[in-house]
Length: 329
Length: 104
Image (cartoon, rainbow over all chains, first blue to last red; front, side, top):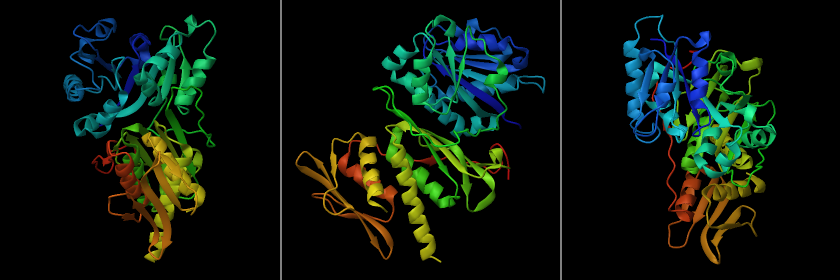
């Protein structure tokens, strides 16, 4: 069975997630879209605000998905698929989290839960950020910084209400996540084509052409995004040892690893690496290299992660593996 | 291994762990004393041997540990310097070929 794309839409309380989804569902391009709404609190309201057919909407209102309800996500996806009768049904799922949700455990479930993985693949993580209150929210709520750090796309909402514009906020967002696209929006208006560019399942990020050292521009932001690029292909065992050392050393402070890797053992294909915290998806393969350039590009997001340290770790493991390879002939 | 990389590996790890400790690299370039105030928590050394690079971690009251790879060496160092810090782990979730985006 073909797996369907699932987009996670998250963002802090009041940042415009529901408005965005409401607007998206009015677009003909997204007519065949199912929605899972996770609400926090005994009385859910968001699902009442989303105009969708009963068949294509599932509400999860007994708790927050990132805390204790991950089994419920599996059940919700199963319920949606059980209602599916044929090709005319939905072919995309939007998952709206609570505003307080840590996206990492949800992404882990999407990567690791066999039942979920059999049904859906993570298309992208869209994070809404309030252009007016975003800076204060980022100051006050660590989870909002984590949401931003894990985004593939940042949607700046309510830009019409930010008279001074958003350059400072955009710089701050860029400091937390230099690889995510940033799109401005008012009243949830954004073209679906901007949000849902054609992506492969378990998509590949597109780091900048040249590595740029991450610079903190805010004293409270300890989340860093580090990009690594390598032209010489890596040994497969180097990649495994590197991911292992990284996850073990960083522990819960490693938030996300994604990228494409050139492996010596596979001269043609591009290995897609995708991990959330300590959970890594099995490597998948692209048939060709983006832009035809065979080069390893990895993006790592974590707390207090230093580019120099990550480079040193990889270089040391490369050296160890080279040494072992030459010793064994 | 270079001096600069040796230094970055240890300083970067201590920063990651928010360790209440300082790394002192005086003296032998590939040897580092990790202190909390006047107390020595560990001495980390890297040396090239016939088997390749070896990491040696000495700590008061503990058996000296030697590792051939940086990953286990950092794990030992973390257990020594920041025993309260949760151990990291990695889980490669199972999957079958063709499970992902594209098959080879």
